[in-house]
Image (cartoon, rainbow, N blue to C red; front, side, top):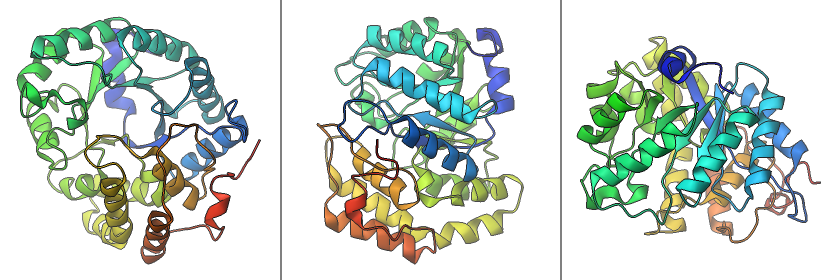
Length: 339
């Protein structure tokens, strides 16, 4: 259970959500019949070494709910206290999401990132409100609202989840504690608007590191998450900390140093599954493996990473002066801790 009540959740978030949070994709055994505990623990330890505040336990892969909850328990056990464990509320319908978040509470999650199911097709703001309210009322955890074009809510309003709806949700639901602001992505209009209206109520996250560091010259962000910045090793926690402490020029020196890697990651994602609004989690897993994380196989159906993408990503880390494995790409599908 969380170390706060629903009415204390926003104060908890303001105090604890200071820094950058990465993503941990589950690792599986070689025969894909179970999760790989040793590999998961390896990834958590490395994220801590890289300076991350916490991690999102990614659920948007082929994993059962019991396996996923064990995955969260392993993260919690390995990380210990003080590391923020975020549950990924991304299951097939509201009923399953409520079951999952209640299990995540017992597994030791501190926070939940609220996604919306692919079969959820609201046609009014009220339907989005009702789904969000039902989910938040079913959990004691603090909830991070996630406005992004992935959900397709732009049929209702160009912002997807506009200011008027966010205001209603924040006024009525005390355990919404943060907003992962990506309305209008790839523009940063969403985070600017959410900061303007709601930064005194809840924590505003800009998860896109390429936006967050420059914006911190004008916007004193305290939190950035969740995204796959761990493939850049310790760059992002370092740069975020520098910008937050007022050392903006030093942060921007690091920012430009890693620009080749930033461009490569964006190009690979754009070319992977265009038009589908699907994140290439296999590419993320490969990117992590390049930086020393476990890698390893994912269950079908899973996206693929062609050799040309692998080469592009590897070379971009080298051009950025970032750590990159010398292991051959064939080792990626085996993983560093096969079981």
